[in-house]
Amino acid sequence: MLELSDKMGRISGTEPIQLIDRNQSLVLPPPKSPAQKSYEQLPGPPVKPLPLPQENEWKEESVTYQSEVSSIAPTSQQIRGDYYFMPMIGLALTSYTTYTFEESGRKFRDQLNGELGNSVALTGGRRWENLLAYIRFGYQHQRFENANFSSGIANIHAVSNGSEESYSLSIGGGYSVALNDTISTIGTLGVGTAWRRNSFDSELFITETLGNVTISDYIVSHSDFQSSMVFTYDLAIGLEIMLAENFTSYLGYRLIGLTDNKDFEGSFQHLFEIGLGANF
Image (cartoon, helix red, strand yellow):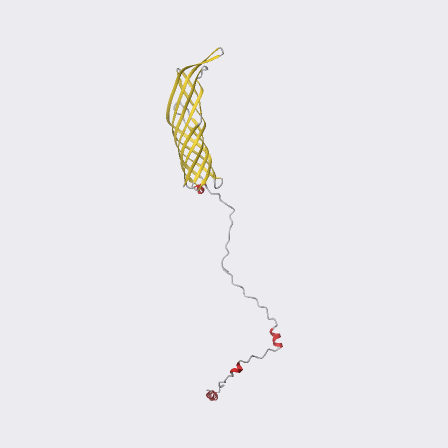
């Protein structure tokens, strides 16, 4: 192969193939001179590192606006729900009405003062944020008395007592303000109609004074019973307390007014109510 390469080289004028000594190719290169080493240790020109790639380099900067409102108070609807149903019971502490009647040719007219009474009611309604609308069905009962019912004549009077019952149906609306997540204030105003029934019993006496002795003689008794449909209105204020997620308690005051029932003039009932209701 080498002879053939030598002949072809002479004919073509090219360098023939040379055989490389394997042992010579494995010989280490000669060591560098001290001058070469000193030159290679000289510092070169400063080289700035390439900048690292940044994420979202071409992304537009977003602008964030901070609201001045730090928090928004939740509404009564958000806390308690859209609808509610609440039974209530109450006590009537003070009330009065005026009654007029004639007996034995004499006209009697005086005020009957209320004793301790009671009430029961069913209320249901709908909430819109802090506003609400409701429908209420209630029953109220109270007794009245007057130990010196006047006839306008000094020596004639009546010992009287009576009672009043009313079945009322009313609609109304109100507004609720949440004090916190548990307690809310509430105020309502309603109007409606009621079936009012009054009873009256009395005993008439004539009083005479003989010397130092006062004598009361029984004359006659008088009883009456009247009922009719009347107009009613009520005003209430109170507190609602959240007991659980779907249950609310109520504590409040309600003023109920009823118009005249024939010979019984309009009356007012002052109720102090408690209730326990469900929200849904």
